[in-house]
Image 1: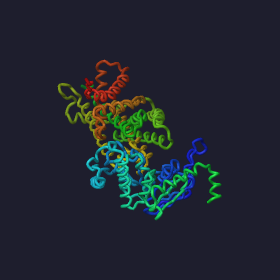
Image 2: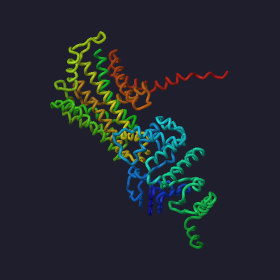
Image 3: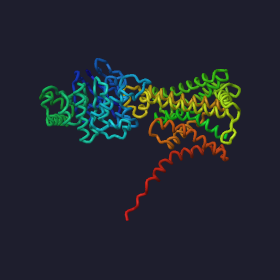
Image 4: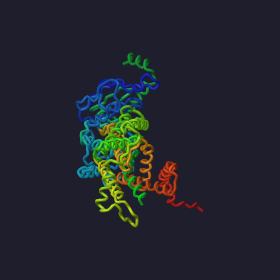
Length: 270
Length: 310
């Protein structure tokens, strides 16, 4: 479903602020795989997600989604295949428009928008039905502006919007990072439910070991713009939060040596 | 009374300008200075076609399309060439000044001798009311004035309703979202650049329509007539919001129309009371200031002051 090959990207090349965000990433996601992406700050995980989403065009490499080579596609063109939930609860909804209108927009993701009525009866009926499954009481407030809702409610709605039309690929960019623990748990439970039910191919970035261990069937750990560990299948199922912490510690220890020394040690002892 | 009717009529014609400014300023959060140029462009194109004997409907439509094109140009400058929004508007407005002069051939095109909407209105008035003058609440009014007022009201209402309906369609909703959260709508597949260009085209098309009708009403098109019109438009929108609030789109549109009419009435009354026309722009600024500040001030007064603990 998703195929990334030799992805490289440098921000601000040649300047003081140069950041080699992605240094050769190869990744293949099968249909229906739920992959968690972990990594320390600056490891390139959000950059990877943004590259797949089309927020910027990468320097090198190839990205394929559902068989289409989307490497040069602009973001809005990729929207046809990709559903996104942003880290910032303010990022995925239009605050001054009503819940219903936001969903009317989501219902046309990747499709043309013409002069047909946005809030049609069919949409409103389906909207009420789907929103009531959230059990947040929002189905009675469909005409309220989204700006009046809490962060957790907005992320839940953004998730529903991103999956309203079944996306070929779902991108979740630390979507609970800005929420309080209770809302975060609710949104994670909702995410898991939707992903399992629709068998969505998902790429989720998170900082939380709990989420990484509890969700999905594969973990990618990134470091310095490359994939360091790729844990799947039975190994992933056995994984506990402590194991992940150990691996992070290992990376941190390695960081304390500079690169040539680390390479020398690796050559000598591995 | 004639003064009052005139103020109402111009207020309604310029309500179209207000609605155009509403789109660029409130929906896209973009101060679009193109307005000063596009209103004159609409007037110029319509006037020149009318002097050549064309049908007023065709002439007005052509003026509208020309204005829309200039709005689209501003949009292109901003999105494709990444020029700052304000600057894009200024560039196009500046260029339009020469374009308008070229279209008109001179700085003023009189329309008194030609068939325009105003002449249609006059004929309609006489036919409808069966006389040249009417008795309205004790005032003697020209039926043609009344008919033209009626036509302006019809035009403003029609455009307002169409605009409201448009912004409830999928395309219109997407355009509103472009101004509200561009990142979100891009992730939902909308080409933000195209929507912005379309929005500015629509906005300036309305402004040009207003110009075309204004020229036909006042009987001439003048190269200077657009100067400062963006301020009238903004003032109408802001006064309108102070009157009706901005709870929903429909309310905002009605507010813009009311604001335009009220503003013109206030100016007409001020002039009648002997205000020096030189001070007109100063009074405009004071009115807009009041409209911006009063709603918040009134809200503060309503909140009962908390008594200090004894």
